[in-house]
Length: 353
Length: 214
Image (tube, rainbow over all chains, first blue to last red; front, side, top):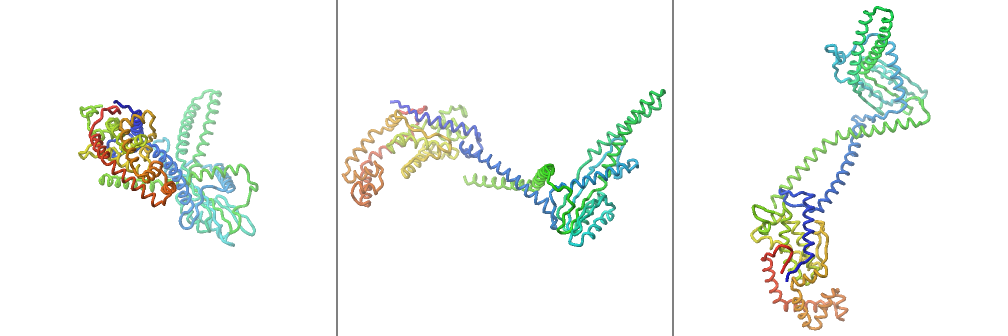
């Protein structure tokens, strides 16, 4: 009697289903000695995605912590704050800086003459071939002991002249507990030395150092200047050829406009050159217990909050990026080690099998 | 599918299992060769078509999952498969339930037999004469042992409940069940020997492809 059992046919289909699922998910790898079950593969993939997500989150968190520690906990007990400037200090510093720039731009009548070798390298009359031009700035908050404010303030001013720089602006106040700020400018190549000389004047509460690369801007300004100068030359030639008063007036009008632009560009280049040649250090000095500087803004404003939020956002981003600098090489080394160990174990297992 | 110029149906069990790691359809051919024999084997051992079907499914799932570990050492794929089957069977006897871990790992559903299939499995395994023999042997047991074996094995009661039903101590109930089972085993020994020789023949025999058996 011929017997057909539906169950066996269904079982065969189930097995083929498992086989095709295995083939689909894991692939048929003749070199793999042990095929993984499809459900394990699915579960494994889900677990892998979950593990990867957790690992990524952990890596970012770790990077943030490491970055925070690295940027805040520099050696010698110095606390280096994340670049989250106090709005008051920031505003004041910006105002003073702008005033200084405008003052110099107005009073400095000398023709533009680049001071550094990098910026003066103009080969063949084209766009200057510059190395990296960096505008260096630092903010340093120091707390000095009672009765030592004046000495420290004078010493801080002295640091500027000691390193071939000058005091850009200074202000101090307070009757019982003194506090004050001074902005000093020192040659960029002596920036680190000046900072090192300023730090011992008191206890460093916060320190922010930043460097802005303005090379591209410098090159762009120079290129534009060359173009306008070429126009000026052409217009001067036209002027010489002008035979009527009308023609002369028209060319002169054009020429004035071009010369104005040239002066503006030269002013900007001078400004950049000055900023890169001299670094700016803003020192906030306060006696223990005193507020660092007189409060100009008494009520918290929404814009201040917004500025804080933006600064905080970039501060955290900065810390994460710095942290990745530390974490990534360690993680790569760990991964390599893990692969080597796994490879070794597989070899041992294969040998045993 | 041809492999080395031969059709899959022409390959032996060892070749099929080796091939199945790269071509899973080769395992289907291996399955068709042994499925019905294995099902009949389990049915005769358990006298329960449903359990036999479950054991068959689990054995093949386990065989599929571990096919890459098969090493042909001369005895072929049939004995290897029946080795897995015997292991599953002993686990079933120990635990009273069929393991489903291999099927779960492979994502295979746990199917049950339809009434028609049940009949076919019983026909396939020739269960009715076997059941009749067991029933007859059971009826021949002394009354006390018959009741004890019936309460413990057929009704699945705990020894405490068996003792309560038989109005005796638990120790006495255990002794009666033990004696009854030993007596049954002794009476069934010739039939069992006959079955085992038949199974050995079945293991050696190659069934026609198509999940069918005569």
